[in-house]
Image (cartoon, rainbow, N blue to C red; front, side):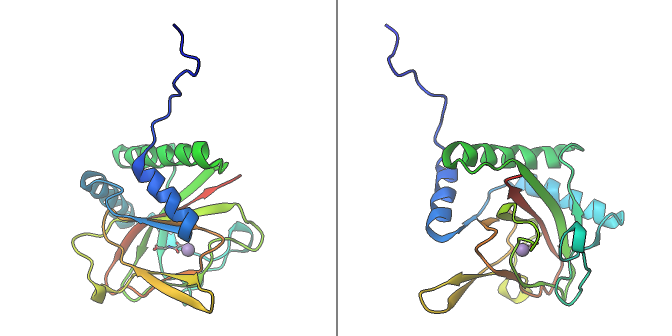
Length: 213
Ligand code: OGA
Ligand code: MN
C-alpha cells in the first residue's frame, strides 16, 4: 500500500541545526573542526602558495564603487577565491559550504543565492578595526563567515582574536574568539560589529559572505 505521506528526502543535520539555533538565539555561532585536518592543510598550502606567488593584494575598505586602502583600519592582504577554478582544496571547501547554504535555504528560507570568499593573511602588527560587514550602498551580505587556517596552536599571546561586540540591555559585551585552525565563525553581517585584534604572528584565514542577490 502506498504511504499517504511519502518520506521526504531530508536528513536533519545536527551540526547545521546547532548553527541555526545559535544564529537565532545569539546571532553568531562558533564551530571547531568545521573542516578536518586534511582540508585545513590543503587550504593553508593553497593560501601560502598564492601568497608566495604574489597574487594577494592589500585589502581595501568599501566596495568597488568606493574602495580605499586604509592601512590604519585594516592591514590584511587578500585574494578572492574563484569557485570555478577548482583544485582539491577549493573543491573540498566549496562542497562543504554549498551543503551548508542549501541546508540554510531549505530550513530557514534565507534566500542565499550568492557567495564570495577570499583568502586573508594578516602580517604581524596588523588587524582590522571595529566595523560592520555591510556597505552603505549595498546590504546584500547576510551572513559573514571566517575559517581559520593557522598552523599549530594559537595562544592568547599571539593576539589576532576576532572580537564580537554584542548588544546588552545596557551597553554591550565583548567576546573574543581565537583563530584556531579548523574553526569557523558565522554571524549576522548586519547585526554584529566586530574587530580583528592586532596579530603578533601571521594570521591565515578564509573570510566570506553569503548574500541574497
Ligand atoms: C573581515 C573580518 C574576521 C576574521 O574580513 O571583514 O571581519 O576573523 N574578518 O578574520
Ligand atoms: Mn568583518
